[in-house]
Image (cartoon, rainbow, N blue to C red; front, top):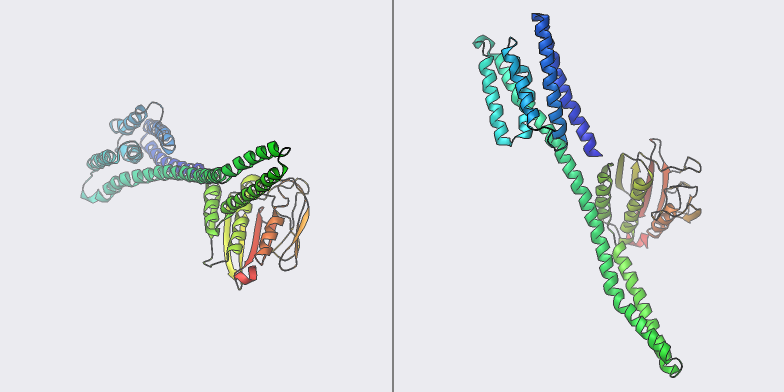
Length: 411
């Protein structure tokens, strides 16, 4: 997941800063072995408590024993000033500043950092001739503390954003399911009830009044046809898709699943059939990415090429093909290409669909590489274009579709 990557990056940077300050403690060996060993022990305690505090902070939690761990870090930071020469706290207070900014309300944490700067400025004041040295150590406190605070906040916000995206995607799916349920209930409830009543009545009248029974059966057939029409209308409403909306949903679903996505859509107005064909291609490709591959990156792009619009969905995680282990193909219209499987997860099969240019797109094999490309090729042909899919040299697969820009070409 993206939040885990952000947390690892932030943890690595904070650890690197802590280790950099720890190395400086080795200069105390120049003043004696005892001073050197004591300085190293102090730094190890500071770094250990700082690590415990920051590890919990990156997860949006408080460390076990809080606030004892913060107090222990503060004691380990300032106690060496009474045991070692040279104001050793100047090397460790930047880490303490980061801890205080993370765990205290920002106004109180800022005030505490201000007091730390005042203390260090007083402790390290060696006269005007060394003012630049004093200023350097004083400025290091807020800058390092702010960096640590920003890294922790960055990690938390990233995790919250991922959670929000996942919730929005779930909400969109639930909303669509509720709409379908509502439409089916409202559209079919009356029709099915009428069918049941007329069937019962026709059954009772078939012996004593065949003419009326036949009339009731005729009305039953008409109601059944109306019910079928209602179902088609619900399905059309469910499948009425826009390319932009489908890409937005695809980005939300993929990123909530830990796949980094880049989408670049050309600013062009398409006829309804062409736009729906591209939207179905995006849905099919994203379904294969989520179900069958181990992709970490995915790109969705459209480009205008004379009288056609080309869609490419590429990723770095090809779906497995346990039958052959390979898949071949190329650009639409270049011949045959093996393709990702169907959205419904049907058993692998074989078949051929001709595109508008006369080239055939075939599918076969097993596993994730099935008949999904045939349906897309048929949709593309109806929109005056073609579709194909193939593995890439980067270990992934690319799904491509071309459709006509003009409505007359797509008809």
